[in-house]
Image (cartoon, rainbow, N blue to C red; front, side, top):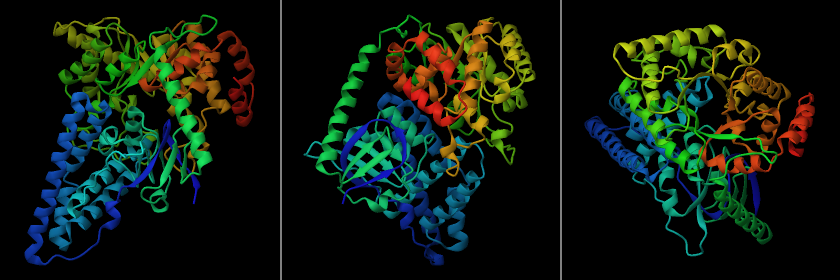
Length: 573
């Protein structure tokens, strides 16, 4: 019987294929008691399974490092290896086996649940979703313990791909998708900032997540359609629906093929307004992807991934090499590097700062200013890399002029330290600030006097303006990029930059949305930064836009107070 379910679209495109159900090993774990004489053998079984998974992950990491997988995967696998090495997981599970004489599978799941509870208490949406990484690592170990690691089916004779149906998938699971004719995947769990969603977008595999109980309602080998743009999954479609989606899939693929012809074209509106399209990257190898789509530069290099998948912070030389690699890869095109944007719930040399609400606590620039030694290390590495190309330093989550002044004082100290070491750097390296909180957007004069550029982080700006946590399912539907208050803050930030004569970019999700491109052009934005995979589609929207016409329409749109009327007006653009 045909039916349709709706979930969260995390990777665009249309996929048609047969369902392949991936077992959820954690649901199959039983609890039984081990006899005293077999306890150490059970501990050995756990350690052997852990070693097997470590070997698998190391092999996958080597594959990712050679370019066989998206560069994000390399960091994600590193994080999974680090979780596996954490004594709070395997050592604690081994202790459970010894003290409670439990089987290894059950001990691992019990310890996992304790760690997940700790992650649930974290306010920051991105960091809270890292609990999924703990679950995925444990699932991998449990599958080895149960003796069924699972394999994807071979390519089908009918030419259709495989639709993977799972409770959740780890980034490491997705690496082999391209080699196994996997057309797309759907999961019970997941979110837009999850690792799996990020990898799916990098691989251009259509995906819909957060479908809750999809594994229980789909049968193996059933025909499935995934609409990764609308978040729709159709199970056992009739011939009419199937034909309609075959046509739509062909149209999407043809459109993607045509987009490749836009690579070498300069982005400009119909009336001649030049627009810069930059790339957001997470790791040095991503710069190659940005260069391949001929991005005008890197508008946001998130440095968090250099810090996350490891036990210790990267030293100055390691950071310098990473930043220099990106700058040299971009060969003269500007590279904007955001300083460490991390919450207070991350460990620093074994120390933690528990907070009731880290999203409103010691994070981003606040955290860096509270740790000047670490911050100075990063600033020196950035300055050293500035000698090799056009590097710009971006400060996240600024809320006051005092934070800017403290940052500039530390930057000057870093310059002095390098001068004493006779190391060359760009003395006039540009420094910019992210507009992510309403306080910054409402006090722009202090920012434009002290900084050389601004970058609007729409994800956090929307979240803080509307007091909505995107990771909270109870209120996620209220997250609205087109809320009148949000649009006015974005507009006045862009106009403040125009008035002060300093560039302003948008580097949040809105920048990579073709529907929002015309709106932002009408607001006066001339610099967009997005994931490299989104660049050509946004460029096409810009090439079809008339800036003068859009400016007049957007001025009227900004006077509207009703979010529904705003949405209707944006659709008419």
